[in-house]
Image (cartoon, rainbow, N blue to C red; front, side, top):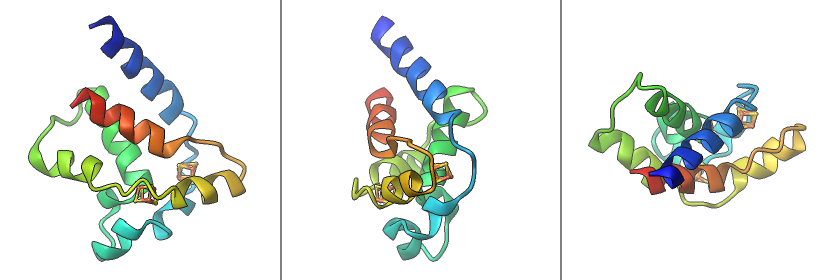
Length: 100
Ligand code: SF4
Ligand code: SF4
């Protein structure tokens, strides 16, 4: 349980660093394949995790699919870093999965 609390704390702290610039959205292949569903983008996945952790959303199959459909390709991280942010998006998504 303590481990889960640490993961939740880490996720909320790291996701709070996101500036919502959305540069990571268009480069995400699952966003492209979904014809523009933001919940299938890197930014969307971070928001989903934040809202789940804050209790605004509840886990369901579609949100679980959003997190598990990430390909871990790191395209989002590359653009995030090139724009001056340094979010380890793939690692954060893996942490989110570990809480499911
Ligand atoms: S590029 Fe980085 S800072 Fe910008 S929305 Fe995506 S995760 Fe957030
Ligand atoms: S790592 Fe996941 S969220 Fe990031 S661009 Fe690839 S599929 Fe999208």
